[in-house]
Amino acid sequence: QVQLQESGPGLVKPSQTLSLTCTVSGGSITDSNYAWNWIRQPPGKGLEWMGVIGYDGSTYYSPSLKSRTSISRDTSLSQFSLRLSSVTPEDTAVYYCVRQRYLRPVDWGQGTQVTVSS
Image (cartoon, rainbow, N blue to C red; front, side, top):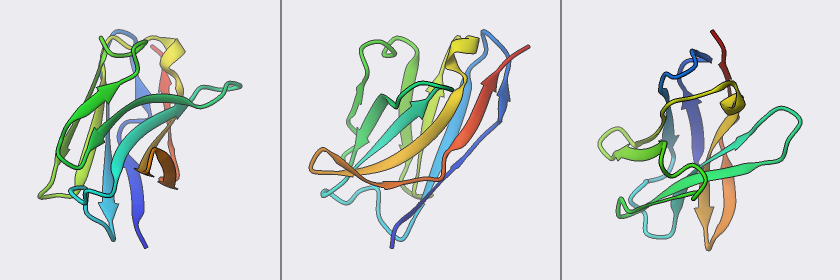
């Protein structure tokens, strides 16, 4: 049973960079059957896909966030990470890491609240 756990600061100041890490247990982030996503949900809004890192380290980002987003991984720690630069209060959201198979989300972390505020 795979488990995903997000970690990182819950409060970030405007214009700074938001950094989150997802630690994966019970599965390998280099397994070719899966890809690893970041998805967020702002308060009162729907889910927003941010980007994905594949089993081979390839990355793809939402066009609307591409200029500010970076996803990386550390295979030795079984972790993948999100960096979102130049944050504003509109980036306040619950952030989820999600395992994907055949283009469908199959496993979710519990989510972590990030608030952007001075």
